[in-house]
Structures are given as C-alpha cells and as structure tokens.
Length: 532
Image (cartoon, rainbow, N blue to C red):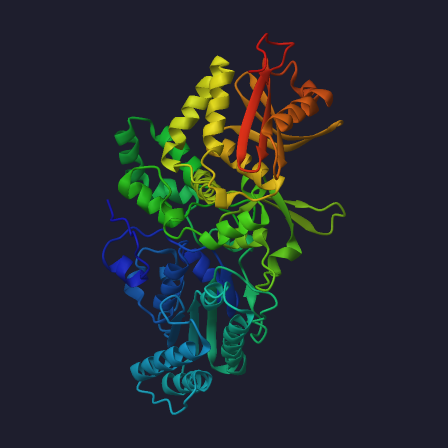
C-alpha cells in the first residue's frame, strides 16, 4: 500500500516519496486553460496548500512528478514559467510594518534565485520590479500563487478596527500591483478561508473569477465518495477487517462521520485531513476539529445566542456569500466560510429569479465537536462524563423512572458556575437544547402549534417529552415549575403527539437566580404516574 500523506503539503515531496495522491489534475487542467486569475475559498486543512504546490510544480515544468496523472499528456512541458509563491500562514503578519519587512525579504529571495537584484526599498515596488524583471530575464510571464491570502485579517479580527484597516490597506495595495503588472502575468491563483466584501482586497485585479461555489470545481479540494473507495480501497478493507464488519458497513460509518462538505449542494466531499488520520489510526474521532478549536467562533455563537445554527438547518440568500464584512461579522456566514456549516441543498426562491441555500452541519465529526465545545462554554459539567449520563438518562426514560430522570436533569444544571449564569431565558433554552443534542436525543426546538410555541420536544422510541422552560432573575423555582406545567396543559401542547407516541411526558424546567429545578409528569390519560 502507498503511504498516507498525513501532513504532507508539498506536491514534490508527496510524489517523490511514494505517498498516495488523489489525482486533482483534471481540475488544474481546466483552470489553466480557461482563465488567468482565480480565487478559491475553502476551510483550513482542506488541501488548498497542496493544490497551490501542485500548480507550482506544473508551471515550473517538473514533468516527472506528474507521471501517471491525468494532465501528464495534456500539458506542453516546454512551457516553464517563473513562479512567485506566497504563503501568509508562514510569514509574520501581525502589523503592517511586519508584513512590509517580511515581504521585502521574501521577494528578494526569489529575485536572487533568478540572479535578479531588486533596487527598490518598499515591498510593493519590489513586487512590481520583480515581475518585470522575471519577464525580461526568462522571456516568460510570471505565475503568482498566494496561499491563505486572508490570514493577516482573520488573525486580527479581535483587534481594534484601525489595525485591521491598516492590514487591509496594505493587502489591497499589494494586489493592486498585480493589476498594473498584467502584461507580465501568465496566471494568478489565490486561496483563503473567507472572501471579504467591504475590504475590497481584490478590487484591483482584472477578470478575477471566484470558483468557490462553482459546480465545476466543487470537488477540487477534498475526496469524493468515488475517490475514497478507489484510492483508499486497501485501507478500507484493512479497517473493515479490524472492526470485524463488512466493507459496506465500514463505508457507511465513515460516510456518517466524515462525508458531507459541499459548495454546490450536489457534490459532497470528505475532509482530507480527517480521512487520512482515520485510515492511519482506524479510530473514529474528531481529527479536523481538534487541530484548531474555533474559540472565537464558539464565543461568538454564545454571545449572540445562535445555538440553533448548529442544531437545525438554516437558509442564506446567494447575495450573502459575497458580503463577508469584518466590521459586522455574520455568524452564519463565518460558520460557512470556516467549514462548520455547509451547503446541503440549493433551491429556487419564491420568485424564481434567485436561489436559496440550505445550510447545515456537514457530518457527525463537526456536529459532535461543536456540541461539545459549545456546551463546555455554557457549563463546567465534565464532558468526559456525558456518555455515561446519556446512557443513564435513556434508561430512566425507557423505564419511566421519573424521579431518577429529574435527578439527572438537576445534575446537569448544577454544574453551571455562577459566573456563567446569564440573566436571559434564551440562555437557558440554548443550554438545555445543547445538552439534549449532546446526549443524542432527537430534539425539535420552538415547535409552533395553533395554541402557542413549545420550547422543546424530543422523542425516543415510543416516548415523547414536551418541555417548557421558565426563568426569573430571583425568587423561588416552585412557582415557575407549576407555571410551566400549567402552560403545557392549558395550551394542550401534547395533543399533536397523541396516537403517534404511546408515552407522553410533560417536563418543566425552572431557573430562578442561582437555583435550577425540574419536574416531569406522565400524561395522565396514558399513565397513572403522578407528579413527583
């Protein structure tokens, strides 16, 4: 079996040392024959750097590296071009001065490789001089490849606006140089996580084509199902053997855990990083998420109480994808750009002249990870105990042990540190929904009926539980519990579940100051169980 290229981002290294390579050169051939300036947005750890490295090897004419690949007999290998490859993830970029200094050093290094002496002092002038010099020296136009173009801005999102604007202006000026040097350019390719709108970094580039949501390039990064089964066949067989299951069964599990990323709602791919680590260790776990827990994003979701974005599908208009504004970050768009939401479906809008994107969490890896980290931001309950608690609560529901179930609920809420309490009922709604999803329940939030809106309903086998949550900044929990149960009964929230579920329970949850309590009762028409 070929070696798994875990952490390998160099195409030359990968191909020279017999690592497994999923052939993406059909996409590269289409790129270089249909345009000149391209931009691609993809989340981190999705193969952008390897794609850039492959383009670099191609334009430099490293023919031997492409043996056996699609593009091998479709490219004129006499066409060799000087390449400027810039990776902002490995360059210092915390200030304009730092970026200026780093770029000058980098550009002079490249100039030295071609025996060109740069006489200019500032980075922007150096770039212009280098592009012109490379064309004159080699007789070929230059290729410019920029990886992680947006990292300087993304890393500064929590900084004062003045600092972000300074970095933005520098990047904007840098890319404006490319416009002025168009006659010296053969090909330009930029990658990043986000495409900012008001930043207008790319406003100076001629004929820039954004292929981020282009169906033709939906699988340019990541592994399709067909690619997974073809290229990783021996690893799939080995994994199935170790798990003592069929190949079909192991593929089903892998698909559930790691497939599901899409940028067109039709082509769904696996994250390469998680896939490679899965086949390397043969253990289902959260590989991609753990490489960079998005503390900033988790805190933003909590601050804005937008937990439902993780729990339920949401919609976006097509115009929203190009409105990523660092001065007013959209949580939904930020989650999409960073890979925590993906396009599940695209459909026509009501008028038929536009489209609506249905977004959702890509797969089990992302869903479970987001639930864990969001829950830990709301409460200090030991997350390693959640599996045990889940099993216990499921058993209590199955057995109809109302008293024990109430005790388990109290245990959950008892672990909310005082400093994490937020005086808003919506905070406790979100916390409750997070817990239920983390414990594996099928939960519907804010279910509308003709008599009102149910806070939460969750089902399991033949049981439905209808929950109402009440909050008061101070006072006793007992009146709140009674008020919640009375509301469920008075508005007959349970009526829509009679006949579908044999056992229906009503659950009241109350928070008053630092006190938390719950009370559950079986619906009297189906059970003789009384309030505990």
